[in-house]
Image 1 (tube, rainbow, N blue to C red):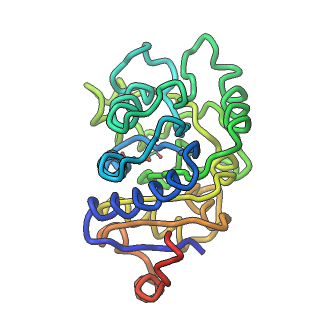
Image 2 (cartoon, protein in one colour):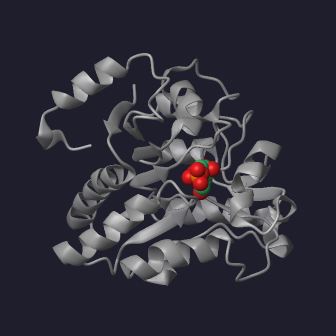
Length: 261
Ligand code: F6R
């Protein structure tokens, strides 16, 4: 079962997740981070940047792999995940850009971009901690409903719901690309620790399904139930549909602090 931690604010969620990641980096300076984009991980990246500064942590060897990328956006498009990762993660944390990888969404090389990305993750020794958000339709990465639990990095078609949800980042909903390249559910499950965050009532159904629903490819977030070390950090609104909420609070309140996340 995933550990569920309910927090009072997005900022607190960011601090909690960042604290665990900073401890990892302190112990393993060349740790490999799995990087989500979108709105959800921003408090984590803010708290990480702050922690790196205040704790004086050396991040020069830190490595990272983004979860996904849109296919076919022009190079340098501000909403390409390559640009977003540079702006939200690489620059504020002062990371070496050569150590941070994003799937290649260029059309010319898309046919083997997934395989190349899997190889790069494998050569890096795998992902130590994978930061995840969750879509309102239950996707993690861009693994839309129906994605195989064994899937590797590959091209997927975004659902109409995901394109609508992401329209806020573009001038018009039609500008949201139809296709993406995403780490598969199999790729995500190979990461050593999953840290899934979700905020707001719009995510409550997706969170309840991922944590407590029957395991099904129709609800890709349920893949986390197959992972031996998955942590779900949610605010009260995103926790609103969880059946066993009282138990999660009780378990967290009684958790030995030395265990960390
Ligand atoms: C982003 C990603 C997606 C998002 C999800 C939620 O790299 O893989 O799964 O985490 O679409 O997006 P936000 O956080 O914008 O609500």
